[in-house]
Image 1: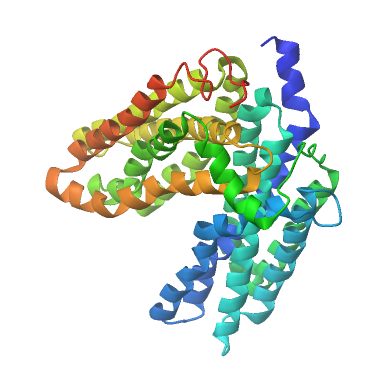
Image 2 (image 1 turned 135 degrees about the vertical axis):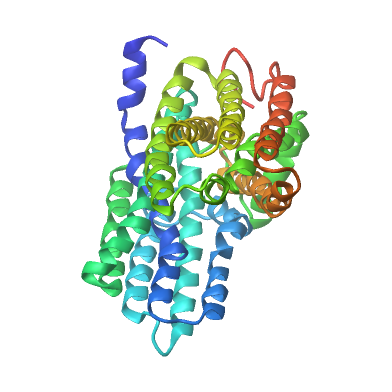
Length: 417
């Protein structure tokens, strides 16, 4: 793509609004998980109760169950997608402020209920934001648009995670949550400014159609099953290695917690943000298939850098290199993968299909985590990371087999599925 066309893609309003909208999508997550857990711990809540609070994250896993409602019904303001976005964002502002007002006092069950409402509303915002991004971006914009939205999401997790913990020491937990509620208004402003995507020629006329239609449409494609296999396998090796990366750096090669925090969490985040943007920009030139293949290969090779670190032992330069490489390639792979999911959605059923496909993609992360510790104990760290490299290869093989299909065309990435 010529430079003027590239600059046009990077500078248009459809992509620009994805940074604050991605930020709004990522902000509530830590407030119902890590940051909330820290608040409960500081407040002296017993560990059993803190463990139960982990259940408030269930809506993020189950959000595909009510996604059809957002395909079927249009609220009477701002259009099919922005109407739902503004409604969920205003509800999030209220719920975050309510958590700050209640706090972990004598009626801690009330805080749990509000936290659950917050997670449900946040998951609902994720549904409609994913649908909005898919519906509004042109095919050639999907890669960079995905990178920009991932960047916003990651920055928000830093703000509501690390920054919120620091703020709590200076202004208190309640004021921190009140401040986060105010920050959430960034999403409201971005939604008001953002363009509403064009409505498809037809939308679900009944709730039954909104539930059945997405499945019937997807499985009517000849490539449906291979696509589902690819979605499960593409990030599997990356997730397998990531499940124990922090434990490896601390226990396997004996870096201090501070060193791991600065490099793996701090610099790693910056590398992920850079990877998402670079990957999105490269997709404008490379297209979908070549991006998925190139970034997938880099993701697989990055696991071998940890294998080398495990062989050599404690080496600060090697640790920095491995973490930077892994997060950079992971960010690039994420941008391409999100673009793939967007390309697979029918605009009549975007909310439901994207929620289902993203839930399917999470299966790999769920199932590789539990056995990873047993694998390390059985074979050691170097062999473990080599196995994670091998785990990335089946996804690349499936991708290669599909190189000439209309779903993932190796010459173009804007061909309809």
